[in-house]
Length: 315
Image (tube, rainbow, N blue to C red; front, side):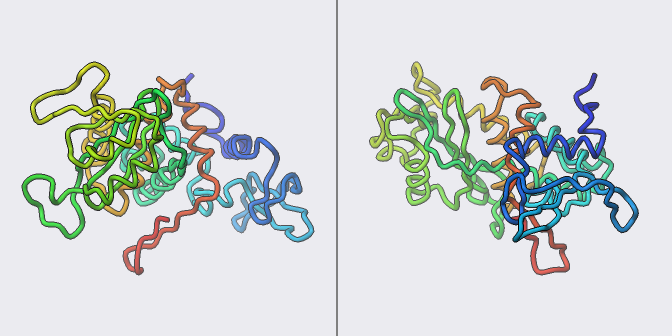
Protein backbone atom coordinates (compact mmCIF):
# COMPACT_ATOMS: atom_id res chain seq x y z
CA UNK A 1 0.00 0.00 0.00
CA UNK A 2 1.23 3.51 -0.81
CA UNK A 3 2.42 5.69 2.06
CA UNK A 4 0.01 8.41 0.91
CA UNK A 5 -2.90 6.00 1.57
CA UNK A 6 -2.31 6.19 5.31
CA UNK A 7 -5.52 7.38 7.07
CA UNK A 8 -4.08 10.68 8.30
CA UNK A 9 -3.23 11.65 4.70
CA UNK A 10 -6.81 11.01 3.55
CA UNK A 11 -9.12 11.72 6.46
CA UNK A 12 -9.42 14.98 8.41
CA UNK A 13 -10.34 13.36 11.72
CA UNK A 14 -7.37 10.98 11.48
CA UNK A 15 -5.11 13.90 10.53
CA UNK A 16 -5.99 15.77 13.74
CA UNK A 17 -5.45 12.60 15.78
CA UNK A 18 -2.01 12.09 14.19
CA UNK A 19 -0.92 15.67 14.84
CA UNK A 20 -2.21 15.53 18.42
CA UNK A 21 -0.23 12.35 19.01
CA UNK A 22 2.89 13.96 17.55
CA UNK A 23 2.73 17.25 19.47
CA UNK A 24 0.93 16.25 22.67
CA UNK A 25 2.72 13.03 23.63
CA UNK A 26 2.95 14.25 27.24
CA UNK A 27 -0.63 15.50 27.49
CA UNK A 28 -2.97 18.01 25.85
CA UNK A 29 -1.44 21.48 26.05
CA UNK A 30 -3.64 24.57 25.91
CA UNK A 31 -1.97 27.07 23.54
CA UNK A 32 -3.70 29.98 25.29
CA UNK A 33 -2.68 29.46 28.93
CA UNK A 34 -0.13 26.65 28.68
CA UNK A 35 -1.90 24.33 31.10
CA UNK A 36 -1.50 20.58 30.56
CA UNK A 37 -4.38 18.10 30.67
CA UNK A 38 -6.91 20.76 31.69
CA UNK A 39 -8.87 20.43 28.46
CA UNK A 40 -11.65 18.13 27.27
CA UNK A 41 -12.61 17.27 23.72
CA UNK A 42 -15.78 18.87 22.34
CA UNK A 43 -17.90 16.60 20.17
CA UNK A 44 -20.37 17.57 17.46
CA UNK A 45 -19.65 21.32 17.45
CA UNK A 46 -20.38 22.78 14.00
CA UNK A 47 -19.04 25.84 12.21
CA UNK A 48 -21.15 28.52 10.48
CA UNK A 49 -21.46 26.34 7.39
CA UNK A 50 -22.83 23.42 9.39
CA UNK A 51 -19.66 21.30 9.18
CA UNK A 52 -18.47 19.43 12.27
CA UNK A 53 -15.26 20.94 13.66
CA UNK A 54 -12.66 18.21 13.95
CA UNK A 55 -10.14 18.13 16.80
CA UNK A 56 -11.90 20.79 18.90
CA UNK A 57 -10.94 21.10 22.58
CA UNK A 58 -11.90 23.42 25.43
CA UNK A 59 -9.60 24.39 28.26
CA UNK A 60 -11.28 24.30 31.68
CA UNK A 61 -8.51 26.04 33.59
CA UNK A 62 -10.15 28.79 35.66
CA UNK A 63 -8.26 31.67 34.04
CA UNK A 64 -8.72 30.41 30.47
CA UNK A 65 -11.79 28.42 29.36
CA UNK A 66 -11.00 28.95 25.67
CA UNK A 67 -11.52 26.62 22.72
CA UNK A 68 -8.65 25.46 20.52
CA UNK A 69 -7.38 22.77 18.18
CA UNK A 70 -3.90 21.36 17.82
CA UNK A 71 -3.34 23.84 14.96
CA UNK A 72 -3.44 26.88 17.26
CA UNK A 73 0.01 28.29 18.01
CA UNK A 74 1.60 26.49 15.05
CA UNK A 75 2.48 27.38 11.47
CA UNK A 76 -0.82 25.75 10.44
CA UNK A 77 -2.96 28.10 12.50
CA UNK A 78 -5.66 29.83 10.41
CA UNK A 79 -4.69 27.78 7.35
CA UNK A 80 -7.65 27.25 5.02
CA UNK A 81 -6.16 24.08 3.54
CA UNK A 82 -7.50 20.87 5.16
CA UNK A 83 -5.08 19.44 7.68
CA UNK A 84 -4.74 16.09 5.87
CA UNK A 85 -3.48 17.96 2.80
CA UNK A 86 -1.02 19.90 4.96
CA UNK A 87 0.32 16.57 6.23
CA UNK A 88 0.65 15.33 2.64
CA UNK A 89 2.66 18.45 1.80
CA UNK A 90 4.95 17.90 4.80
CA UNK A 91 5.64 14.35 3.69
CA UNK A 92 6.27 15.33 0.06
CA UNK A 93 8.67 18.14 1.03
CA UNK A 94 10.61 16.04 3.53
CA UNK A 95 10.79 12.94 1.30
CA UNK A 96 11.95 14.75 -1.86
CA UNK A 97 15.74 14.98 -1.73
CA UNK A 98 15.92 18.15 -3.83
CA UNK A 99 12.55 19.59 -2.84
CA UNK A 100 9.19 19.91 -4.55
CA UNK A 101 8.00 23.07 -6.25
CA UNK A 102 4.93 25.05 -5.22
CA UNK A 103 3.50 24.40 -8.70
CA UNK A 104 3.83 20.65 -8.15
CA UNK A 105 2.17 20.95 -4.73
CA UNK A 106 -0.59 23.04 -6.30
CA UNK A 107 -1.29 20.29 -8.84
CA UNK A 108 -0.89 17.35 -6.46
CA UNK A 109 -2.95 18.75 -3.56
CA UNK A 110 -5.48 20.46 -5.86
CA UNK A 111 -5.16 23.83 -4.14
CA UNK A 112 -4.36 27.22 -5.64
CA UNK A 113 -0.76 28.06 -6.47
CA UNK A 114 -0.81 30.93 -3.95
CA UNK A 115 -1.98 28.55 -1.19
CA UNK A 116 0.64 25.95 -2.15
CA UNK A 117 3.43 28.57 -2.17
CA UNK A 118 2.45 29.87 1.27
CA UNK A 119 2.02 26.35 2.68
CA UNK A 120 5.53 25.44 1.47
CA UNK A 121 6.94 28.45 3.33
CA UNK A 122 5.03 27.46 6.47
CA UNK A 123 6.65 24.02 6.30
CA UNK A 124 10.11 25.50 5.70
CA UNK A 125 9.59 27.61 8.82
CA UNK A 126 8.84 24.40 10.74
CA UNK A 127 12.11 22.95 9.43
CA UNK A 128 14.16 25.80 10.89
CA UNK A 129 16.11 24.16 13.68
CA UNK A 130 17.20 27.05 15.86
CA UNK A 131 19.70 24.75 17.60
CA UNK A 132 22.67 26.72 18.87
CA UNK A 133 24.75 23.77 20.11
CA UNK A 134 28.19 23.85 18.43
CA UNK A 135 29.09 21.16 15.90
CA UNK A 136 31.99 18.72 16.07
CA UNK A 137 33.91 17.77 19.18
CA UNK A 138 37.05 15.87 20.11
CA UNK A 139 38.20 14.07 16.96
CA UNK A 140 35.23 15.36 14.99
CA UNK A 141 35.68 16.94 11.59
CA UNK A 142 33.72 19.99 10.44
CA UNK A 143 34.02 21.28 6.89
CA UNK A 144 33.37 24.94 6.05
CA UNK A 145 32.93 26.50 2.63
CA UNK A 146 31.00 29.19 0.81
CA UNK A 147 28.96 29.15 -2.37
CA UNK A 148 27.14 31.70 -4.49
CA UNK A 149 23.61 31.50 -5.82
CA UNK A 150 20.87 33.65 -7.31
CA UNK A 151 21.07 37.42 -7.49
CA UNK A 152 21.23 40.03 -4.75
CA UNK A 153 18.43 42.56 -4.79
CA UNK A 154 19.54 45.86 -6.31
CA UNK A 155 22.70 44.44 -7.92
CA UNK A 156 23.14 44.44 -11.67
CA UNK A 157 24.18 41.12 -13.18
CA UNK A 158 27.95 41.02 -13.72
CA UNK A 159 30.74 38.60 -14.47
CA UNK A 160 31.79 36.34 -11.64
CA UNK A 161 29.85 36.18 -8.38
CA UNK A 162 29.76 39.85 -7.32
CA UNK A 163 25.99 40.07 -7.89
CA UNK A 164 25.09 36.76 -6.26
CA UNK A 165 23.89 35.82 -2.78
CA UNK A 166 26.56 34.31 -0.55
CA UNK A 167 25.91 31.18 1.49
CA UNK A 168 28.32 29.99 4.19
CA UNK A 169 27.79 26.38 5.25
CA UNK A 170 29.23 24.14 7.93
CA UNK A 171 28.94 20.37 7.54
CA UNK A 172 29.87 17.91 10.26
CA UNK A 173 31.13 14.68 8.74
CA UNK A 174 28.64 11.97 9.59
CA UNK A 175 26.32 14.62 11.04
CA UNK A 176 24.45 17.83 10.45
CA UNK A 177 24.64 20.78 8.09
CA UNK A 178 24.11 24.42 9.06
CA UNK A 179 23.89 27.18 6.45
CA UNK A 180 23.90 30.96 6.72
CA UNK A 181 23.04 33.66 4.20
CA UNK A 182 25.75 36.28 4.67
CA UNK A 183 26.11 39.81 3.30
CA UNK A 184 29.77 39.47 2.31
CA UNK A 185 32.55 36.91 2.40
CA UNK A 186 34.70 38.89 4.80
CA UNK A 187 36.28 38.14 8.17
CA UNK A 188 33.63 40.16 9.98
CA UNK A 189 30.93 37.79 8.69
CA UNK A 190 32.78 34.47 8.56
CA UNK A 191 34.72 34.43 11.84
CA UNK A 192 31.79 34.88 14.29
CA UNK A 193 29.72 32.19 12.54
CA UNK A 194 32.51 29.59 12.62
CA UNK A 195 33.51 30.44 16.21
CA UNK A 196 29.91 30.15 17.41
CA UNK A 197 29.02 26.96 15.57
CA UNK A 198 32.17 24.80 15.80
CA UNK A 199 33.71 23.36 18.99
CA UNK A 200 37.34 24.33 19.52
CA UNK A 201 38.44 20.70 19.89
CA UNK A 202 37.19 19.92 16.36
CA UNK A 203 39.30 19.50 13.23
CA UNK A 204 38.38 22.21 10.74
CA UNK A 205 38.60 21.55 7.00
CA UNK A 206 38.43 24.26 4.34
CA UNK A 207 39.78 25.34 0.98
CA UNK A 208 42.61 27.84 0.54
CA UNK A 209 40.51 30.97 1.14
CA UNK A 210 42.44 33.47 3.30
CA UNK A 211 39.41 33.99 5.59
CA UNK A 212 40.09 30.58 7.14
CA UNK A 213 43.86 30.84 7.63
CA UNK A 214 44.04 32.65 10.96
CA UNK A 215 40.69 31.29 12.12
CA UNK A 216 41.84 27.70 11.65
CA UNK A 217 44.54 28.14 14.31
CA UNK A 218 41.83 28.36 16.97
CA UNK A 219 40.86 24.71 16.47
CA UNK A 220 42.56 21.39 17.18
CA UNK A 221 43.67 21.19 13.56
CA UNK A 222 43.11 23.11 10.36
CA UNK A 223 43.41 21.18 7.14
CA UNK A 224 43.16 23.08 3.86
CA UNK A 225 43.16 21.95 0.24
CA UNK A 226 44.16 24.22 -2.61
CA UNK A 227 41.48 24.02 -5.26
CA UNK A 228 43.35 26.66 -7.26
CA UNK A 229 45.99 24.09 -8.19
CA UNK A 230 43.45 21.26 -8.57
CA UNK A 231 44.14 19.71 -5.19
CA UNK A 232 40.99 17.97 -3.96
CA UNK A 233 42.26 15.98 -1.00
CA UNK A 234 45.13 14.57 1.07
CA UNK A 235 43.90 11.61 3.05
CA UNK A 236 41.01 12.84 5.22
CA UNK A 237 41.87 16.48 4.54
CA UNK A 238 39.27 17.53 1.97
CA UNK A 239 35.98 19.40 1.53
CA UNK A 240 34.26 16.73 -0.53
CA UNK A 241 31.45 16.28 2.00
CA UNK A 242 30.39 19.90 1.87
CA UNK A 243 30.79 19.97 -1.92
CA UNK A 244 28.31 17.08 -2.01
CA UNK A 245 25.89 19.11 0.09
CA UNK A 246 26.23 22.10 -2.26
CA UNK A 247 25.61 19.80 -5.22
CA UNK A 248 22.23 18.73 -3.80
CA UNK A 249 21.39 22.31 -2.80
CA UNK A 250 22.13 23.81 -6.21
CA UNK A 251 20.42 21.04 -8.15
CA UNK A 252 17.34 21.66 -6.06
CA UNK A 253 17.45 25.45 -6.29
CA UNK A 254 18.15 25.53 -10.04
CA UNK A 255 16.30 22.42 -11.17
CA UNK A 256 13.24 22.46 -8.91
CA UNK A 257 12.73 25.95 -7.51
CA UNK A 258 14.49 27.87 -10.30
CA UNK A 259 14.02 31.25 -8.58
CA UNK A 260 14.29 32.38 -4.98
CA UNK A 261 13.95 35.95 -3.75
CA UNK A 262 16.79 37.00 -1.46
CA UNK A 263 14.42 37.65 1.45
CA UNK A 264 13.27 34.00 1.38
CA UNK A 265 16.69 32.37 0.92
CA UNK A 266 17.13 31.61 4.64
CA UNK A 267 14.05 29.36 4.57
CA UNK A 268 15.24 27.42 1.53
CA UNK A 269 18.56 26.91 3.33
CA UNK A 270 16.67 25.63 6.38
CA UNK A 271 14.84 23.17 4.13
CA UNK A 272 18.00 21.68 2.63
CA UNK A 273 19.80 21.69 6.01
CA UNK A 274 16.86 19.84 7.57
CA UNK A 275 16.73 17.07 4.98
CA UNK A 276 20.52 16.64 5.04
CA UNK A 277 20.65 16.56 8.85
CA UNK A 278 17.83 13.99 8.96
CA UNK A 279 18.95 11.69 6.15
CA UNK A 280 18.77 7.91 5.81
CA UNK A 281 22.50 7.55 6.52
CA UNK A 282 21.78 8.92 10.02
CA UNK A 283 18.95 6.42 10.57
CA UNK A 284 16.07 8.73 9.63
CA UNK A 285 13.68 7.49 6.93
CA UNK A 286 11.03 9.52 5.12
CA UNK A 287 8.31 8.93 7.72
CA UNK A 288 10.63 9.80 10.63
CA UNK A 289 11.72 12.95 8.80
CA UNK A 290 8.10 14.04 8.33
CA UNK A 291 7.38 13.53 12.04
CA UNK A 292 10.46 15.57 13.00
CA UNK A 293 9.29 18.39 10.73
CA UNK A 294 5.85 18.30 12.36
CA UNK A 295 7.45 18.61 15.79
CA UNK A 296 8.93 21.91 14.62
CA UNK A 297 5.62 23.60 13.83
CA UNK A 298 4.82 24.68 17.40
CA UNK A 299 5.42 28.24 18.53
CA UNK A 300 5.84 29.57 15.00
CA UNK A 301 3.47 31.71 12.95
CA UNK A 302 3.57 33.16 9.46
CA UNK A 303 1.30 35.88 8.09
CA UNK A 304 0.65 36.67 4.46
CA UNK A 305 0.06 40.12 3.01
CA UNK A 306 -0.78 40.60 -0.64
CA UNK A 307 0.91 42.96 -3.12
CA UNK A 308 -1.69 45.69 -2.53
CA UNK A 309 -0.57 45.94 1.09
CA UNK A 310 2.66 47.31 2.51
CA UNK A 311 4.66 44.11 2.60
CA UNK A 312 4.71 40.34 2.59
CA UNK A 313 5.51 39.20 6.11
CA UNK A 314 6.69 35.64 6.50
CA UNK A 315 8.12 35.77 9.98
